[in-house]
Amino acid sequence: MLNIRAIYYNSINESLYVYQSRSHPIYHSETNCLCGAVKIIAEEVNPKFTVCHCRSCRTWGGSSFFAVKCGTRVKIEGEDKVKMYESSSWASRGFCAECGTHLFYKFKASGEYNIPVGLFQNLKGLEMDMQYFSDMRPSYYCFTNTTKEMTTAEVMAYFSAKV
Image (cartoon, rainbow, N blue to C red):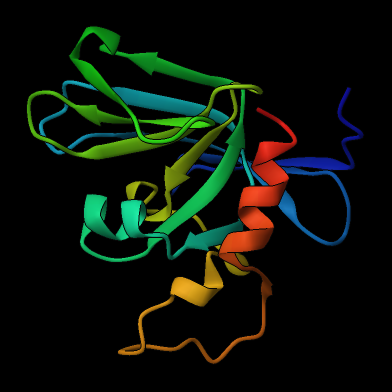
């Protein structure tokens, strides 16, 4: 059960802001792929986003994967147009079979979704919180803000205990 402090609806960007605490809001947001065949409705979008530097993410999208955690309360319309790729023993990636838009990274054990930050055009107050596979981060860029980080060994140890 959520401990809700306040709810605010912004009619300009059609987002519902649910404040659980003073530290960060949880957003309700909707998005779709490039061609519109797939629509995603996420009830709980955490604005503290993560960045994954693993080889799979960089190969999948041409760069590191910036994602917001959306939990399990995600509805997908046009699910017949979603193609799945099992990219690891703990997660699968979903993309639109029509236009190729990268839609989500879904954890097998929990059913939780990580959705690309860029799909949600109107989120406010985003903050990078965690970098995964930080030892695989390419040398051609760096972030100036300080975040939590997990190396390849730390990520593998974490998921080997869960799989």
